[in-house]
Length: 347
Figure 1 (cartoon, rainbow, N blue to C red):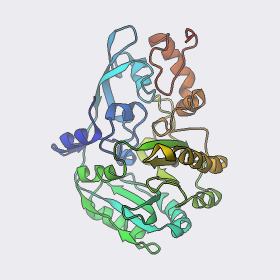
Figure 2: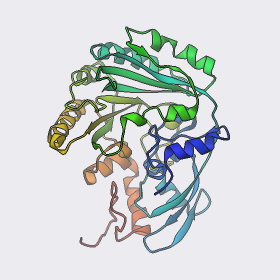
Figure 3: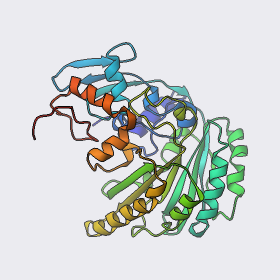
Figure 4: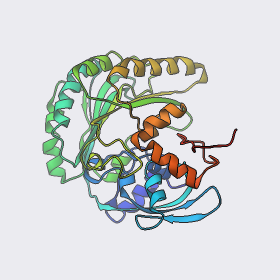
């Protein structure tokens, strides 16, 4: 079944160590990593793919290959962002970092203050040190109250985090302040309750060209308007620091130049609600389209064919096709954001 993020975080934190992983502990870490691996430590330590230092891959023809910077280097490059296109990745080796207590949590504002919060957050995030990662958007608290929340993680000294996050806590009229010192494992479990198993999920996602006033105004029109109270949309993540200082061609994951990622993440409970949630999600994304870059974080998008694959792999797509020709010329591994070999047999 594969190791889950929560299991990995718990075992590494027993030694005071961690590396960048996602934010929901039930997610499988291999799949998250192969697609890029955004997480709370990316500003300081880069994405999950940036911390992979080796692995094992079983290819379509049954070969067992070790990959690293010194062994099967082309395949090592490809699995770091190329999803499961080239084989079954049976193990991954990660660079770990010393991570102690963090200053973390979220500040929740009334949904109607979203425009003011977004504009403040845009300016505040521009000065973020590498240790600080923020994300936030529109959703409902467990009691049903619609809010616009900004979550934050500061992975440096707790006292510094409290000081640096003080402006966020004092801005506007928050209805709740849940920022506090906590362990990294506690931090990584914060979002688990919002993503219980068994619910229906549909996402649309692209990076923003820029968090302009016009983009903010359009986003605000969709705050608290989803047909489902479990939806996170509109939602944005601030990408910066170490993750954005890697060249776009150093790993197969190419999207290093954007400061904001925009996912519309719809979640609902009954199949009878599917059509209206699909329609709303697509409408929200379509309204934002003028402000979106032609680049997607593949872990956040529902598979919609070759167009999404090209957006996920961006300028590295042709190089990935060459790898596909070498390691999987029959496109055996195709249940993914598929990179098609140059010549594939008819289905």
